[in-house]
Image 1: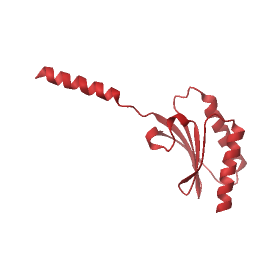
Image 2 (image 1 turned 90 degrees about the vertical axis):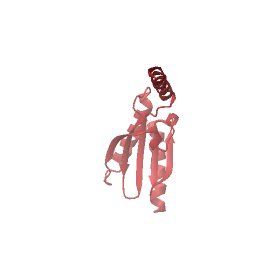
Image 3 (image 1 turned 180 degrees about the vertical axis):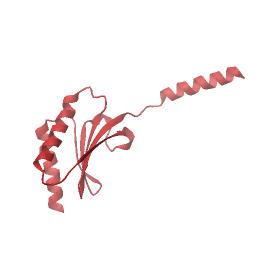
Image 4 (image 1 turned 30 degrees about the vertical axis):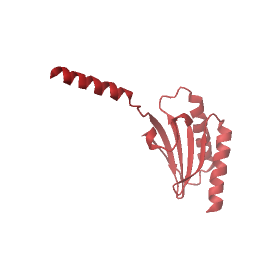
Amino acid sequence: MTYSRITSLILIILLAGCIPQSDNVEVLQAHSESYAVYLYTELDNDNPSNADNYLTALLNWKKKHERKPLSFKQSEANTGQIEVDEDQLPALVVKKDGKVIELISGDSGSEDIMNKLESSISLTNKNS
């Protein structure tokens, strides 16, 4: 009886170790009336310069549009809760009325990221 319980316990532990674990990501989000911007980065970032480029672009964009009230909120989310694959991180997602209109990911300079962000928001504003 004890042997079967120990065997069952060992099997459960082994199987639990085989289940892929989802990682958490850091989320920086900003919302306005019609659009939302999400920056997803790895918590244990081995290459912080990529994430820094996204942060720099986002902060420069915010400074450029100071007359529009926009506040940022920082949180954590499970990779299963976001619409971006883990291998695409860092990533910047722009949504209009809940629909993704721009996904910027990969190794890009802050100027390129800022230009893409400006382009997607200006397209959004023209369609409003």
